[in-house]
Image (cartoon, rainbow over all chains, first blue to last red; front, side):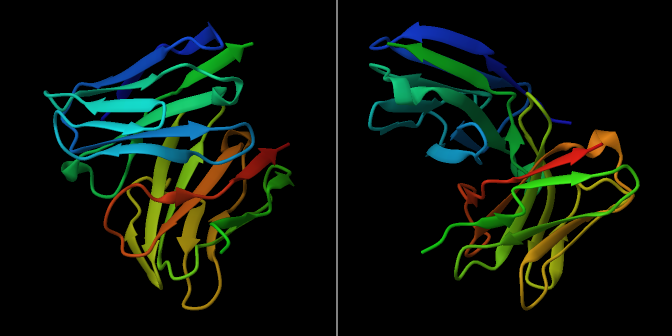
Length: 112
Length: 114
């Protein structure tokens, strides 16, 4: 089945630093989504991307839908302690029916 | 203006027992999706239901697992004769139209099989 490779697996940064994480796939996706999950909670949608090449921002977060439609990245600028959590990419392919395919997540730790 | 409500938040079952997980979608939403998250993994799709219909169950294990979304009441994910490998967090999401993919997830039910 389709799989997403998400990297890095974890990051330890200082408050104020910028962060970048990405996802790649061996197959094409039509939609890319980025979620954040806090401990004990469900994932919360951060950014949705629907077109190849699309660059979208949500506050300090910026995400891009790769031109090849096989990758996406998420940047967080000027990190703050509340950015701590697990970030997941998710992709959808029209061939996959309803299912979103999730990466394994990037765990972000921010020290102040 | 409640979000997607799941209960119980935590559920402990002995091997061989049945587990029933409930999901009440957001008000006005008639489409429900169930996902499973194993420890340190991403979410994996299980099933998509609309009121009284299963639309896509391609991610559901063939045995012991079933889901329903009756005309009245919450959606239920039922796991019969649970085994240790069923221990996971189960998340439900809902949407109004079934179009678009950025749907809202509930806080999940954490199932532990002992």
